[in-house]
Image 1 (spheres, rainbow, N blue to C red):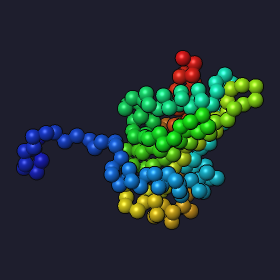
Image 2 (cartoon, one colour; image 1 turned 60 degrees about the horizontal axis):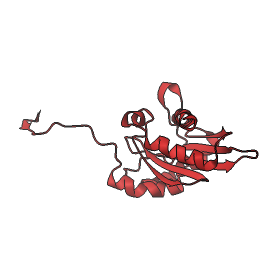
Image 3 (cartoon, rainbow, N blue to C red; image 1 turned 90 degrees about the vertical axis):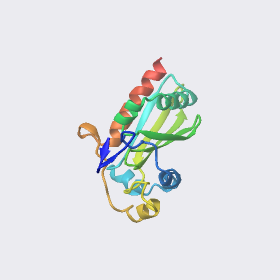
Image 4 (cartoon, rainbow, N blue to C red; image 1 turned 90 degrees about the horizontal axis):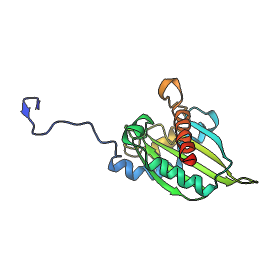
Length: 181
């Protein structure tokens, strides 16, 4: 391949979807404070929360199945969900928490709280939300995003659907399939 008159031995490839070193460092901090969620959870522009009912599955079964669904996502499916990289930061019978980075390194959080339901089964409160206006690849983004917390922003997704709605719908469908298997 020839670039600006220089011959290179290897072809240029697209950048990896793995978060940069700075995003890996700043991501957990931004996830913990999530300034983009402070107002977004009330306005609904960059945040979505749903109640999911699982009449024949315990909280532990749902938690395990959800982690399996996420870990089994192919790179192509992660790309379609616009979460090419993610980290399950906590999972037990009460809660599953996942931090996700887009290719541009915006950080979104996926949080599922699980409760036993009277008479069997469980109820999950599933939330997907943007954590900040700026991507975590920008130095000091968590701090700057605190200043932008009052600035409303949307997270559009595919087919005119909001990104968090799209992700929750897709993950719920995959989780239902896993629990039926």
